[in-house]
Image (tube, rainbow, N blue to C red):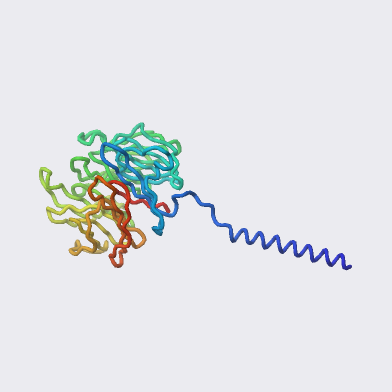
Length: 354
């Protein structure tokens, strides 16, 4: 009987030990890290035009670490000349180097090279993914009005499968469902169109006339807000900037607010229902329900790129355009500068890797 009891106690103790160990493993085991560059954001640095290479800076979300030139560090090679933008698809990042006429594809968490896309690209500008297809705006020859297009990329093979002819100067692009909205800034000239592309057929379904030089866009609900810089002072005829509201349900302009003739705003971004943009070295904000443009700025600075994210404004300062630039981070509630971080030469867009 004693032996039976002892065996029973031993079996129970063993069961409890194994159960507790399994529970502890399930509770205590942290997820495996995806790579050195998760939980942070990238700054795309154009680099010097015509010579050298652009770079990517990685900054941790809590600003505890900053890593420079991460593509070169990981791959022991350069990205290419003039890093214009970045985009994401699944676990990959697509880095657009327009003056080198290529897109570098990397793992977004390790930054290890996966592919280089060159065929079918000519002065590429911006990338967006819809399903398993990527779309890259291309200027072609910036002085020629008839060779602009968007390249369609099979993202499973990273090859260009076709091109869609577009009017002059396709630049920023936003996906809304199965539609793409392409802003025609006008390359080295000026344009005033938004092309709408149906990605189920890869054809242009309509065009929308907005203000001159649409340079940035954000989507809030079903409304596309388009900031138009207006034709600059050196153009044949200088025109005013404007803020245009486009309904993506009807693909029509539903409202337009016009700046003064000599005012040329840029860098539209948004947080919730608030819009932010720059004008003459000042940052302005307005709610989308406002009926008029704001007259008082909230932050001063000549910025080259700007993104609002989680209650903060991230803005890049290119400085002298020849040496390392700066990333500045502001609290949107207080407008107080919280961070100033050295990045690469001519820093532009900010891209969050969350």
